[in-house]
Image (cartoon, rainbow, N blue to C red; front, top):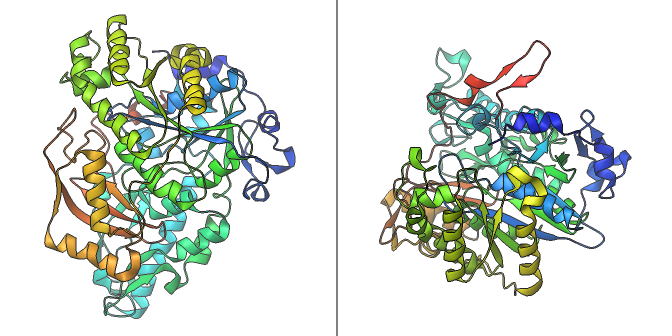
Length: 557
């Protein structure tokens, strides 16, 4: 594949004022961060007063460890729709520094389908993620301050504090820590930990808030622990939410950049797709819907994680409409991976393995059908794909009776995405959209978990220890039973076992723990080994990143 940097340096960018003007945003509404990126003033953040565009949501089959190109496909599709004369905006999450320096590398697309300025978006951007870290850690500091002055058995029980700290970096040694050791001047000694900022409930709240005051209310509703009487204690009880909101006053404003082909791009928010809902902010998507005919947005991981949460958590807020259509990204390499081929052999031609891995893609098709939304399967083409393998993919999709298109936006930009764009437009125009939630709001939490496990993952049953069941039942009893569930599990399998590839059947989903995200408005259900603080791989991407004497950043994928 081509190097991202080469395309970036060959493609002149338009001043951000021109990008904004193309969708009706005046220069006076821009808060510029240099010539190519800007925040949109808060006065533009209200609900659309005119017409409203259509959402196209991009999801994927179960990925390989390197991912299957949802961001790339989203950017390329937006460019292709604009090429066909449709006023289009792409709306994506902000990259986290943890994956940028860790296993994944950058998250701005690739080849000729990228958002720019590439280095700046991947590194710090407009400071939103740092603001989330600061707001989260302010609450943590105020929690420990309250413990220090009230004592271990005061208003907040030091043994039952649930609020940790965060940082935007992969650092496994911080997963479990002890704070407050060294005497009374250093506070009360207790066990806690550090999560990555993308896993912070504050990040999830930023992603789901309707406006600044909704943000403040949600921050105040964060549960930080329990009193000695086992009553929930919230951020508002220690008067933390006002100052937290002040730290996020600028971060709540959407960020505007552009693709290499000049398509407007809103990049805002970055919650994980395991511990949270894994989409960009509703405020940026809603703003984009008031400015464009189509808004292409991406959800994290496969349909079993990001798409399900987009439907059952994000759309359920009522802030944005259900998608007019979805794109289900597949790759030949992922099909072969789920067909039993090892990672180091995925570049070798093997049409038989493509067919063997197809049941995984079929299950993701079934998942989208369960929500009643039209969809198109997009094959994100890699240079190693052979015509025989692509023909096999098309034949299998025809047999399944679904729309399918080959997307070659990496190599060819918007020209390479025209087939996909045409199929999406046809799906929206011709097919009936019968969107429905997977479960009703009033369904009990345990039943919601079972519904997702059986209908989306293909499990036969769920199982959990008594203490986990009691915790979930306590959430129900305390008045949170109407919340949707946000199931955290591996992205590499439809089950909770990352080694169980393809389309596993006859398995039981093991629920290991649960936590309450009362400000975000959902209950997190943990299945298997889920890390909210990743670790760096043996050879992290950071080893390849450098800077020249002229200030040029190199090695940022």
